[in-house]
Amino acid sequence: MQGGAARTVRYTIARWIVVGIFSVLLAFPFYWMLITTFKQTADLYTLENNPFIFNMPPTLDHLRLLFGQTRYLVWVGNTALVGVIVVGITLLLALPAAYALTRLTGKWGENMGIGIFLTYLVPPTLLFIPLSRVVALLGLQDTIWSVVLVYPSFTIPFSIWLLMGFFKSIPRELEDAAMVDGLTRLGAFVKLVVPISISGILTVVIFTFTLVTQEFVYALTFISTESSQMLSVGVPTFLVRGDVYYWGSLMAACLIASVPIAILYNLFLDRFIAGFTVGAIK
Amino acid sequence: MAMRANLPLSAEALPDVAGPPLPPSPATPRVPWRRTPEGRTLLLGVGMFAPAVLYIFALIGVPFVLAFVYAFSDVKVGSVGYHWVGLENFRSILESPSFRKALANSFIFTIVSQILVIVGSTILAFPLRDKFRGRGLVRFLILLPWVAPISLGAIGWKWILDSLYSVINWVLVAMHLFKPYSAPMWLGEPTLAMASVILVQTWRLLPFSTVIILAGLTAIPKEIPEAAEVDGAGFWRKLFQIDLPMMLPIINVAVLFGIIFTFTDMTVVYVLTAGGPYDSTQVLPSLAFFTGVLGGDLSQGAAISLFLVPILVAVTYFMLRMAHKSEVV
Image (cartoon, rainbow over all chains, first blue to last red; front, side, top):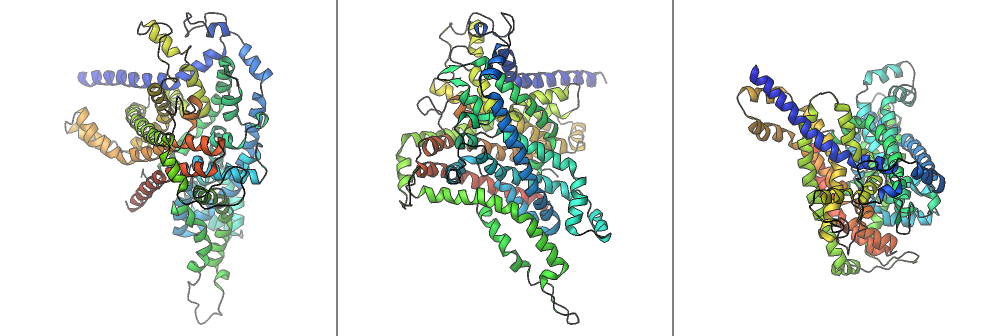
């Protein structure tokens, strides 16, 4: 028993060393954003100062600059609006499709589901050149509608895949019973399956919304005017004036946008990961 | 990738495939198959997924084909008409030193970062398997790089690696490893710049890979490692002969996604170095962006991005093989 206890202690210490080192390395940039946000400019740019502590009193100047003199809030608004619309389009198209592929089309639907999932792997960097022409032809260049149009092309495939996994776990008998009671197949889907799938739908909503906030390449390609920017592109391109970096405001912008998204995403991450590992874990 | 191109075709071909089932019994009058319950269900099914499939086809299938069409033409921004130029674009990019550099960099960028990611995430996944106090907080901190928007995380790194005010350099100077003002220029010197973008990409993907491996690790039945322990297998032997082999399928999943997310992405490179200094960190996607989107040379840009396709095809092949295997088991 003595040896066992010593081993447990050793194991706990080893665990905290590994976990501690990785946590610090991975989270450090966010800590750095936080401390930079509240430091006075003179404090940031004095090489003799210890950068890990406040050598001068903290300040809100960078936040004032960010909210008062930049388009940051406009970009937040653009991103939220695009997020909401893309979530709507995604649910409207992915819910019926996922249901049809799990319930109505048999084995063949399963294979098609895999095929649809694979389209999620086709990267924006392969499609952005032709799409930039399509967007220009439709007159959507430099408006948020360009990304509203294009984003569902990658949120729908993954959402279908997630929802298919979800619908499979609903017992068939439930729908059969409802249909015996006089509901049509479509009625059973709308009145029975959708309401009991709320948690699956919520996962899709969060997942779609975070993908919209994270996307960079399409937003960079289609939108170049400052007032139509999405957050992910506006911050790294328009908060830099000429060659001057306003590091305090930049870090504030990054931190304020990152943390809420990170918290939301974190809540639903396990289901999202289940989408990637289906098949490999059984 | 042929898979995706075929999707809509198979959707239309469906009624023919499923059309002539159910030989009508002689007693009942002949009913067209679409009036039968099976036929109706199938038609409803097709109606329900057709909008999604058409959307995906229009915005992934069509541009995918267009990328090939452009690559064999001389299309520029604002040009009209289409002129077939054969392999001209490929000949000219293969001769360009920027392209060769970008091709080599793409492989270095992907291979080195993925090796670091896999080693790091495997090490990290083991301690995270057990429940312990503070695990929720640790998980949140570890996941931050993956769940926060990457362009913003990369900006954070740009400040950490700043030429003058880098905190890393401050530490190096404080430890007397470098003299003030002579510390490394992380993003300004070719080798260091490449190392920097690789490390930031590793930082970005490590959490994703960790949670995937963690999911696989939790699925390994606890009895097998315990039985091995009873049989006297030591830590290392248990690790290499039992744990790692059992984790191999899930590690494969993490690697395949990691390759796609790295080989085809340009966000870290674009934000940190924009491909510089002197193309030393240029990768295929960023070169395609600078040539095709900013430079307006759509045909050359498309030709460059087509070099991503072989990697996509290979990864897709391995994924399908794994999906197939897991169904058999």
